[in-house]
Amino acid sequence: MSTRTKIKALLESGKTDIDVTVKGWVRTFRNNQFIALNDGSTNNNLQIVVDFENTDPALLKRITTGAAISVSGRLVASLGKGQSVDVKATSIEILGDSDPEKYPLQPKKHSLEFLREIAHLRFRTNTFGAIFRVRNTLSYAIHTFFQERGFVYLHTPVITASDAEGAGETFHVTNFDLANPPKTETGEIDFKQDFFGRATNLTVSGQLEGELGAMALSDIYTFGPTFRAENSNTTRHLAEFWMIEPEMAFYDLKDNADLAEELLKYVIRYALDKNKDDIEFLSQRLLEEEKQKPQQDRSELNLLEKLQFCLNNDFERLTYTEAIEILKESTPNKKKKFQYLIEGWGTDLQSEHERYLVEKHFKKPVILTDYPKEIKSFYMRQNDDGKTVAAMDILFPGIGEIVGGSQREERLDKLEQRMDEIGIPKDELWWYLDTRRYGGCPHSGFGLGFERLVLFVTGMGNIRDVIPFPRFPKNAEF
Image (cartoon, rainbow, N blue to C red; front, side, top):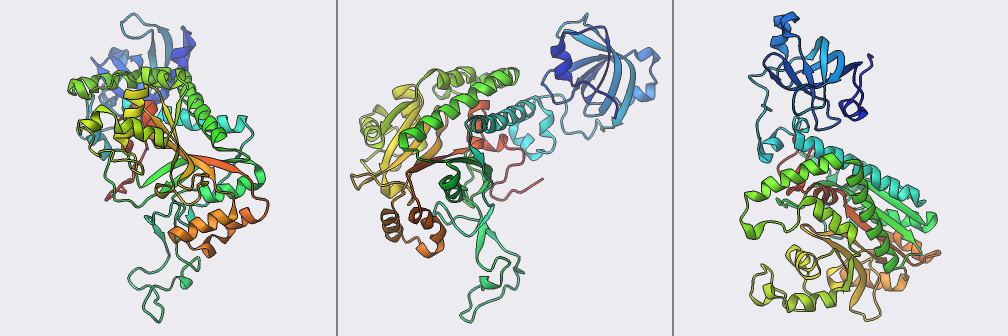
């Protein structure tokens, strides 16, 4: 393989008067002389200067937008505006032709909706190049954060027989012939004859299995795909997405909240440090987008300010009960401006309420704790008041809930009683209950939706734009 230098490294090196080989895709070719070349390592193109008088006209015709080329030549200080260096080409090789009449990504502005239809090519735009470099950095930062703190990375199953959330909206996994599945004598599908000998589904969370690991390894984290079969066609929901789920033995609710706040600040700072150019580009993109909106719908903070806002403030901590009082007395509630009015204690908070607390009332990220047990999952530790559980959600500007977690119920009798109350069969989760029978201890954990995090750090408005190939109702293309 011939040596090549990535464009980002070349532009950052500050070197000139050296021989280089670069490879990438043609963004534009002007006057038969100037090629803007990009290889995905940065949004900045490298200008290639072609000696067109001494280049085969047939080759020049093949240098079209989208074509893949290899260029060898001399890196020199640029005489033109807009770039610091050029490559004076001594040889150009076409690695892959691109028909300019048919190539969908012409050098002009394209809508995000159109780009979703050509998700296999959208990586080649500046916007998506920036998004996926930031996504890569955030992914690396998450692993670095946990590894530096001695956590064990645990792979929990993608195929499971349990539904951790108890929501029932799961994708079934089977190898039956769907036109003719085996039936029992009573006419129901006989899952005993299925591949796993029982009904199975794609996981909605690695949490329950993660807890098993924490009961021996102390601190673990999972980072894997999760699946929800919700028919949600919104800008915040996907059918397939990635979750980070740490579980920590000997942690109470406060320890849990401290770790989540530390993680969020760490990864945001890491991305700002490593992807400064990309985030500045995305910030500019967002400013342009905001100009199209009516004044009242525009964000008070630009993207860089929003990220700094999360780094520079200690997250405000308050209970659900305190939050309900604030929301009940708030102007938008009294003037009936909320879409969902706050009637009183026990109301499940909506995104608009969460954002009001963060953006208008406290003007800083918020950690809400101690929710009513009726609106939370069975595994959350019951508080002594008998009404609330030791849950915590972290709320961010522009996005609402970004982290959800709790101290887990470690007392066997309380856990079994709660499962009975809401009808979760204990025999199916015998293994989960065993960890309470044998050396159970206080422990906590949380879930961070990775795409929500990427959405926040990139300033994008639709979650389908921060995962390479989005899966949502009626769509599994590419």
